[in-house]
Length: 204
Image 1: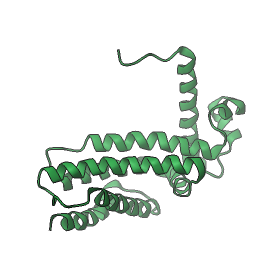
Image 2: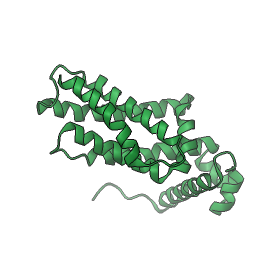
Image 3: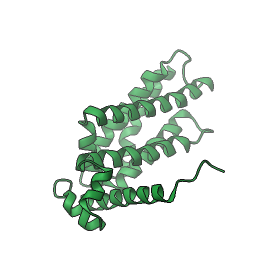
Image 4: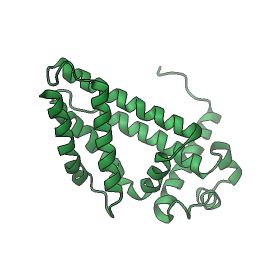
């Protein structure tokens, strides 16, 4: 057994929530964030406005909740699938490429989403900040493992290094989203020299 199975009512509720999110994702990619209204979403999803409000209080909450849930899975899979038998540099290139592939495949949908995420405040701001802190913590674990293998100096501040790598990743990501087409390999090529500077400083 892998945990208690959800009751049928809860399964249906979760399925409806995911359906609304998927329809919203498609509408935003097609119409843009501003033109995607809750009424249009309800019509396209085949549900009432009341049903949507049971899951999300407004369009912004829907957007942030969807991003939080989806990017969480993408980031964790990217980190977990890093090739542990390779040098730390190759591990981070793998992680970042997997993340950039997600943005390349969903660029139209993610452009407005990232804008909202960057300036989220209140409860959602705290939730998203905590999520970022979690990712940086996972990167720190990867770096600590590299220190254990002798690939990095033992006195390197793993948390500070993880924050620098995250900052480089985000800098290149935002630059890529400004372009007409987000190409994962091209963005990785821009990230690579930044990573090399960070790693060189930690191995000198």
